[in-house]
Image (cartoon, rainbow, N blue to C red; front, side, top):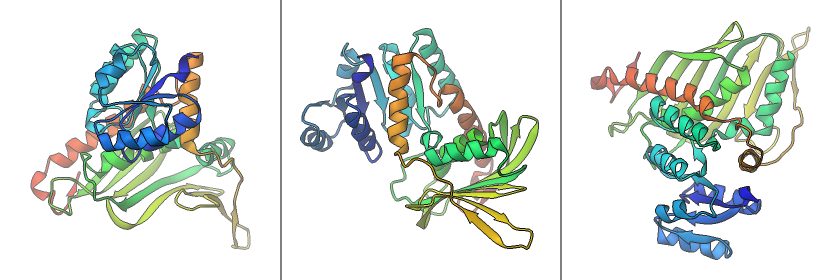
Length: 328
């Protein structure tokens, strides 16, 4: 079976989760990493899986039909491009690239070669997110008034270009998906470099979503310096407000509404408890087998890259203020 020959490139904090999920689905064949220590860990835990520190060896292996890219973000475009040129189906962790033109090039390569190109926008496979999407589409929340996503944690491993490139792809892709958004633009942008290292580690985006003729305002707040992890989405409607708190173990999705007497009622709709990453990996394998275009394809990534590239340019216009605050 073609989809059973998958190689995972990179076994860092997130890559090891991809290794676990593809192995659990019987699809993992090879793991590639530059770290001998990580490869030895994989060898011990998955004795039937081949390990290598050579990307070239993976790409030349004709038995490998698909490559999963979980390398540092600034290498995603180049590794994915090499894999597509080698005739492999490709799954790339977010962001797909840093430049919209690079995303377009990868999409063209995949299309020309009839290969699957999928981006790891994990939240679009979250059962609670998909239930919320159905509730919004059915009118359960009423007319949407505002949507906000707060994603904050403490991150001392500051390798990404900024907190926005690290966290905001989750928020932008999820919000656009939920609202069935045709287009979005960043209205206002703010960022702070609190450590003086040139990386913005606290930021906000005010967004305007164009959704089937409707305009829905929204906001994203991201932070690398918050010791209390927060992963919360709030969708305000005229009838109900949905709160998705993904850091909670139970009752992640809650619907809040007021009775005529002014009493607040909270409902907890049920959804399957399947791990989102399992569903995402399963979807990739299914796309390889059926030839269907992934839910999180390159088109899904364009909007994220366009907004973040625009935001980065706007924040860079006033570099003298970056150590304190910047707005645009």
